[in-house]
Image 1 (cartoon, one colour):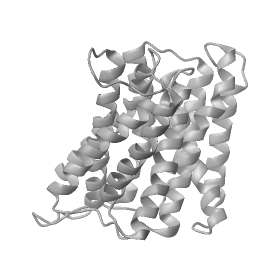
Image 2 (cartoon, helix red, strand yellow):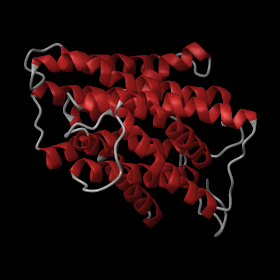
Image 3 (cartoon, rainbow, N blue to C red):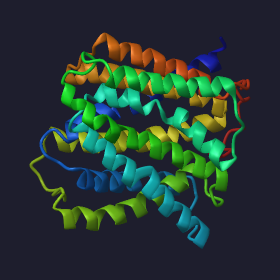
Length: 308
């Protein structure tokens, strides 16, 4: 393995560890009563500041044409407000590691949506991958000894809302494109609009989070999660341009694996044999639905060339 490949592989692991810690942080954020809409507003507001700074540092601006605004609205709702609402609600009732495992269903859920939209072709192996994902869910919900409390089964459907929306989000971009925006510009615009949507909803529903001190563990977890997501996403976009989308897509395994490990380390979670078997089945499904074409590392780009 070349030094360049080794370095990029290490960077991929760092990204997986970064994204993986966001689910345990979400569990901490809801641990003392904070509700989804207030958390979503601050997560998006902090993300908008960071991504806006990245956009300016790259010498870019955010085009405000009708197509760009429409896409940002769609991504804000489908990719942030609705799935994050479900994730935070699920985090109130389910182990963080279990939520990380269920999030690995995104590419498996994306496959049937892509078939319906006509952006992908039928593949027996990828259908088998989808079946593995469904089998993993069954291993979580069916056996009596799979979960710490049997009542948790009722909240599994809530946890499945987020991967379903993320799968839809990816297919929307694949089908209709990005309206001339690059990924960081798109996420910046979506964060601004998402925060604008979440603010009145948080106020009206009584879920507003006062930003004034004193600050506790939930506040720190919220800020850290927002910063990690914005920074990691920006680096991920760079990695896609540097090493290729297929190489970068392997981060899916790492996010799930690190999510489970972080939950064990930070929250003291433990899992039954059924959950570990479900994780193995999910990884098998993830492997089968990933793109199979080869993707050698791209040669180094000239210094100063924009990689996003």
